[in-house]
Length: 243
Image 1 (cartoon, helix red, strand yellow):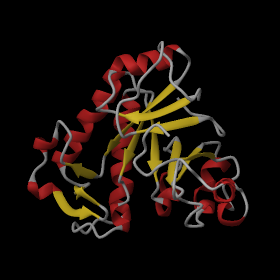
Image 2 (image 1 turned 135 degrees about the vertical axis):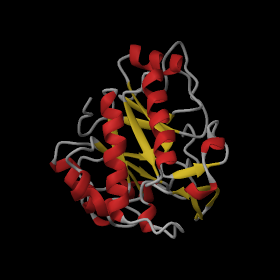
Image 3 (image 1 turned 180 degrees about the horizontal axis):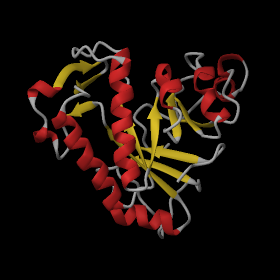
């Protein structure tokens, strides 16, 4: 599955979504949902209404609340993520980490996901405590892509703008956070040029009560949003709830 440029989407990760008569609101083409907290019946219901489901999991960080947390070794773990004390960076070269991610991708397939959204693949840009490099992320993404492809699932790149030229050929879409806020949307524009969507999230202060002028700035293709033409943009709260 190759999602299209300009596709409409929604992302809800805080908790499982609730369906009303088998459908979800808003009426968008693609849902990016947590792999673990939603059940296969939810995904099937969305798909029966013509929707596609992207399944989110953290591929590059350990989360202390996931059901498979006990499988990680201490040697797999690096420093805590800045701002996320319940998470630690993972050694992307660890055979054990890759075995766990292989099983997560298998779980995504068994639940019927159309694609995966593996988060935190940009450890090289952060104080990770594991000496991770950009090449480590590229190699890891190739591994994730090969696993997903074996189940006929697409794969996205979360942030990690610096490695786009190296992975664009085999990645199906971008999931970007805050490129307008940081004036870096042009970094992600090569996806659009390649006919692949950029699913773009901004986190305006005060959401859901967003100032109209601020919303216009974040959604503009000029100014701070330069380079974001044809991005699929949503405004969300940082906790990625139903708003």
